[in-house]
Image (cartoon, rainbow, N blue to C red):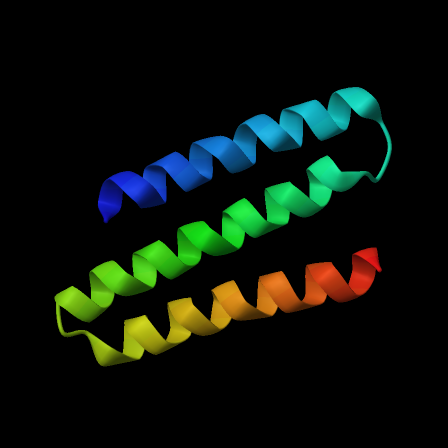
Length: 75
């Protein structure tokens, strides 16, 4: 799970660099926010495996909020 978290963060970073190079709010920005929210959700799964309930809930909420609000702001 930690590999997926790091992979999602790397994808988010690459998409952010591409979006900055384009200098426009495009699909790459939305995909970057989705990759970032996936990173938080993978981190939540790691916390769930550690049986750390509070951190699991906080990370899963962060992931969902980023996904929901970025979608609402984009459309």
